[in-house]
Length: 569
Image (cartoon, rainbow, N blue to C red):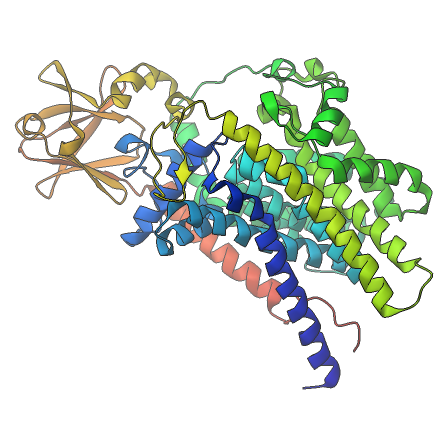
């Protein structure tokens, strides 16, 4: 092994060690409070992760029905809501007895992954290690990422922010780096990871990429090649995401789920631009008033002051970040976009995820230029200045996160939380059953939620003691159920999704008049309802496996891509 190679390994080993320390600092505020605060979506996401955990412990790695959580309703949430990047949280829940620490370590893990991804992406674009390091720190310690993790407990959007730089890097390479023949793979797989993480984040990123493409397409040299690469990236994205997309699309084809008109301009607790600035500075996060933090505001100000000295890319990202920041408030005329596809994002503050990423790149360049322009050429002096910048980025955000957690604590309103001493999620599950229910079955939601079956024409509330949860299956053992040939079960009916068995023999499944799943058979006994692997599910699994294997082979086959360049060779 050459000397340069050894030095490179040593340098990046130190970098990874620093990232581990920074990941621990990311979760440091939780050590004081000794519990995960009751974030907006905590109950929803805790049940999602625990469902994965219980299925994995039973060696089922394709959990489509929620039978252990969500009140054991055989709720097909995972058909409509991607779960694949929650696997690390489920893994830590499996190996760590305390629920709280399973989630805490999961947050630290993704902070480390985010630091690494951001560093590699910026390094490949700029070939500047200092800018790459500080851009990654700016991003992971941005306030909105902490809000997603600890205030909103939106695991999907949180992980989406971690993954997002991959898609933007692939897009940048496809448009402006024609010599990179594998850029379409990076874009396609990056977008696929977003699809498998959070659909709304995918929509936001897709709209942003479309706008950027429309603006900069004139500057593209080989337009034909760019179109071809974009087409290939779309195809590999669909193929790699098929494990989720195919069952999701199939269900939306075979039955009608209805459309809810949304008026994004009237989303609850909208904030004016002045309130957005104050929310960024005080981090109180009260009444859904979110911001970009003190560091984000400083980048906004410094970027404006030193705008002419920024690189062309940083200028573009600064403008894009400022526009999305402005659009996160009521100063933008959102009423013009009511009841359009853009309204699906629900809340304008979601655009702060883009602001945070764009400003992180700009902040990294500003800091790198400040260190490079430092008059003292002493290596120790520059290391001291770098350490000061690092502390200046981290300490304020830790303090703001502490304040955020304090206010989130007061927001709990007496609901349950994951505590350090017990690690038990106490109570209160709110999973919006109606959201993923077919339009014709909406009336059955109350019956299903309360475990009300219809046996011989009579409504009967089943005891949870007579409901046995299994991976992708649920068994009803009530005597009334066992002694009846025709039973309407407390499960919502979805076409071509369920199969039924009685004593090992198949039973007929059909939709009852009120929209619940009904079972009819000639024999008696306990009824077992299981997930049916239809054509869409099987094809999706095969297609995704093939696309991911081929994509990764094409991407890393020459052992060059995916590795930071060794400048000293």
